Image (cartoon, rainbow, N blue to C red; front, side, top):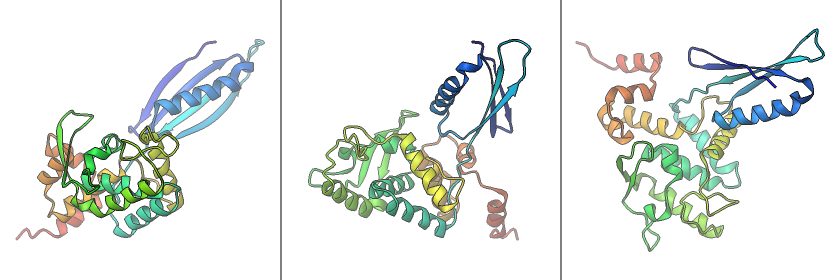
Length: 264
């Protein structure tokens, strides 16, 4: 079987994969395996599948499987009403709603990457008596940099969450364990599916695993009189330009900020 793959991209937002597949009888099973592989490689996956039949004068038939990977653009939630809807949906529309809601709140308040949020352990957050530590000390998985987390903004949420863990007898070293496998923490892919479901329920197409971090960064930026240095520090970024790019301020937001400036 011969497979020809060519990669094309447009504005870094669309990736097209062309798979020329020979041997028609093997096509259905092979196509399924290919799609599964692509889904595991690209997370979060947004796959559009089309099958085209190309006549051939030989006994072999050629099928063309066109798989389009749409790169999702994740944006901060800027509207407080929308933010409340997202948080309420996380809390009330899932079996493990309290866990999902707390993940979002912790990610939003600490500005951690999702991998670092999922990697938190109960000993990072709770004292032996069950109270919340004032600070958690971790190392960012991506950069290896030390990071001090200030936990007071989410103290109430964490106490409610700890009681939820006790009520559901979820004994785990992980702060956010999997319901089915408490010895493991919830995965980034699982949390993406949760956020994607919230987006579907609310009709919002820009939610993802980075939503909580970007939303927290945006709110700190706008409520601290646009203190980019503070946001850079909280994100553990190495430059202000990196932080500005991460915030992804659109033209409307920029103009709104400029409207509040007195140029004299």
